[in-house]
Image 1 (spheres, rainbow, N blue to C red):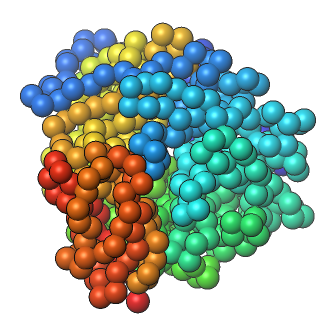
Image 2: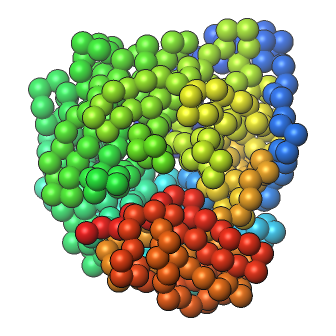
Length: 508
């Protein structure tokens, strides 16, 4: 299975990840910038900054320490942020790093350190921290079965990497190849993810489940139905919803009557931990097309997401969909009269502690290099920042809200060396606590991440007191107490009471 065998469109848009201006990925809509902004004046209007908003670059990559961070960041229990770059590092094939809130970066691992890149190459996705304290992720390339198929790996916080699985292990790559997205750890302790390609004959991708010992089970191969009505090309990862099932999107396939061109506009699907898949919705171009980012389940129980293309103006959309499948377009990006509100959102949404959603667009904005935006659940959008190239450009990853209240993100290009940046954006939101995991049975061990936790005097699960140990200023260890019910976790600290950003779901 060679690159030339790949289906056109989406792969070219998200690779080659060289991290140099002349090799930047093109939009999935060819020549969109020439079409939308032939006159520079159309995209010259500046975005309006909110009074409490502060944007600052935290770090610019230089190639040696990494290049092309296409994925977002994750907060560790030590208070640092962890992430990946798709290029750069000692061998030029990507890195895993940690960075402090002051911008001090440590490279934990450089990929392709083993012969023929047996340890993996080009990690396009971010990390997830497991309950065992290690981080887990995927590489798009490399592995023991050839340089093109990708891996699943584990890495300790100190930087020791172990490959858990090499894709294309089975004949005809029925186990999948080239995972574009990251992993999620389910309530059962297993990791769940998708591959963009491979599967049973159609090369349209898979959903898989992998145990922490590396045993992989393919749950579903896409394009298994006539016309690929079940979807094709799952470029985004999964989320585990409050009903215990997993939800995701495919970038292609679906009901062709709703989107007859280009092999379908994509789908939203539900899959059980055992592998029973249900297509919830097929995208119509006018509603939105080609979702490439993971969904988020909001506090209202609905799912929210983005599409890279489509919408009423053709440059992508933000949508809401109920678990039963009613889809609503909240906002359509467009360039009529200018592209100042952005175009082509390749990243998913994160719900902030204020209830609003935050994300990025890859293109558009005042200078054409992408934006950071906020959107309310009702669909009112505000552009918070327009990238100018010097402080980053073409953001493709979702933001993460640190427990200090600040949002952090990455851009794969821009910065002093044009190798990408890490930035932070404060919109005036206060600190909170985050639980890992966000669900579990009574007695489950839980880590609580936060800021300035030393001296905490109380931890409650929806009002039920729990025993706990303060490990560090950024970490508390506790267990789900007897009698606890689903609801907010609260920690009383010397500086005040901190609430969890999402309710903790008590599993019966």
